[in-house]
Image 1 (cartoon, rainbow, N blue to C red):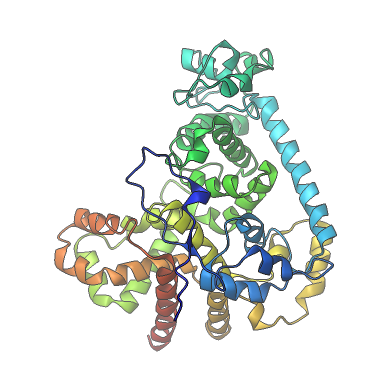
Image 2: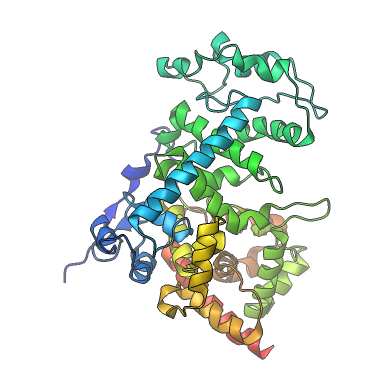
Length: 450
């Protein structure tokens, strides 16, 4: 019997030739399983209404073809209502693009390197708002005086990016910040730059300075508008795929912004705690229920706080999978967790609120929800507790799979970290999601008995 082994996808996310140790992408495009452009377009009515439930099952089975990944993600993340029309979505898109342009212009007025096609990696002000007169700072803030970036390859197109606005780029030095919000924002700009140059540097896409600058711009604008969280390390890993999948910078920003609505709690920090600690506590609880022997062993080693899983939860397994496989994992997770009310929950305009109010009374078919969300809804009705995200069960399934090795070989936390680091490039995204679903059902059954 003929068996489709699938077409490789490495060409869509090309790796630099010198990066030979990068994990190979396991995800392959399979006819009849992977959501294709033809099937995606056929899912829309003539007016633009989308039959999302059929798409969810297809994504769960075989992922999304790279050529349509960006626009499908916009629906999975709640950027658009599947029941909206083409015309309604275009109006929303234009309104959002205008809003992003306004925010970006505000940032540009405060620091004109924003939108210049460049970025900075050196601090520009002190904590009390005074400008730093450092040569590197001056070069980065005034690119017409020479190449400022340590990773600049000196190409002609790069040097052309900053030949204009020479007088404007001196504003940050001549006019120090006047309020605490602006000071705090400017203090983060160089940290964003340092993270940007480290993000997905194995990819050919980020050899172009314009793409690095786009990533920096989006993160800088987000840091300005999110006054509660601002920018934190790890956000560049979450934003990077959006830059690659969505050509328009504003569209990429809003896709990232909607993802952050789900994850921003992980980045909320206080003097005594980090937001992700809640999920780490839930991970400990799940492991204690599913594999009490392993949990006890980890506690004995001093790992009862499960901080060794911090990175997996913060950046959604970006380090454990190849770039392509991490995208495949994300879309399967989002399809499994999909809620058709995402858009109405996220949208804040009056018209959307009216639409949301009008739709709340209409019962939705369970098939419109992702498989994981359906399981949570059933459980939520019974005990009223907020559902746990699938990402926690993904980490739990990895620990369960490595349970024997952890029990026999881990004699300290360093061993735990080493064993978990060894999974990089050796995980199968689909099997990981399947394992998480099985663990989720098992946990719900056992949790009821406790």
